[in-house]
Image (cartoon, rainbow, N blue to C red):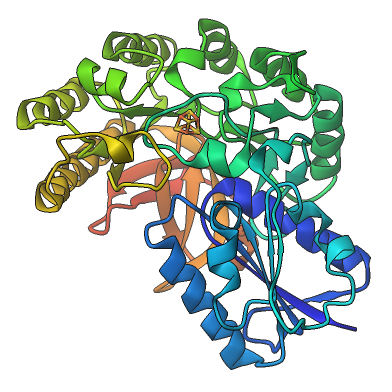
Length: 439
Ligand code: SF4
């Protein structure tokens, strides 16, 4: 029995796809093992957004060669689609597969016999037209269910459309089948995942369904305790979706909404499809219906042309907005993007300073959101994550909780009251309802 190991870089989508590819290997009789357990085959699923994607890829290949110098090394994922030739010259790489080929890995590389020269199987991105469904399972307490892939937007800084192709989706019918399979497992939380999930519903190049239809349909699947929407563009987060989530028993009060800049000039230069006013309106709508909703924000600092005043506008906008945390990205030039050719690049040092300021703001926001939740009761989903005798979990509204380690709590939902913020930023809990004594 051949042994195969996987290494995944990047986003939830990559994790869901690795997991599905791995299940395909297991169905064909391969044994899935850890990276250091001398696998015969190494599959490395790469990311193009990761900083220093090339260096990371080289490092993992080197590591694989150390573990098993005769192991077969195949590289897939976004970076493989963007730079197939470059990757094929990395010593130790045996195959590079693009976006249209990665799900056919077993068929294309049948036998996994090391070739004299690396094979490159990466067609042009326009060939990546079909939708391959995927979900992660058995790896975590939650599953990432891929419902959409690719993107038809052209944000000036983004390589994802070049790496993943046009927007396309699974059908609701298929997604419900996957959701029902997931419901039969022990998984408690499903995270709806995609590149631009608000654009859900394009099947074979035609808009067939809408995201709200998917939200309504998946909410009816029995046996799934929680459903989370991974990240959604503000212009696609409709009142309908917000209102539905606010009433749903399963959809959790948590949104992650990319902002990227709080300055309208920069938003236009980025080719984002909204202005700051719309973003503010979305946040207000959510908070009006769900005062305890957690709102995460993606923001990029140091985009070409971002002056100190522009940045401060973003800073003040976020400071005043009722949001819960930030994911801060320091802008860096990516090959083949419009932004890379723009004038007025911001010096690296300034980018880093701005990033630091927003990271501090993020901590402040998170703390104040957590503080607003103290004394309230939530369901916590505990994970298999132990540190110094403590285990961690998340409330439905994404407060990270720490509790005394108890193996029986792993992957369980427990109703608890949030008591105080620990020094490390997690939140302490106590039993919501004391157990009644029995005589
Ligand atoms: S919406 Fe913009 S940033 Fe997001 S994947 Fe599409 S092009 Fe990239």
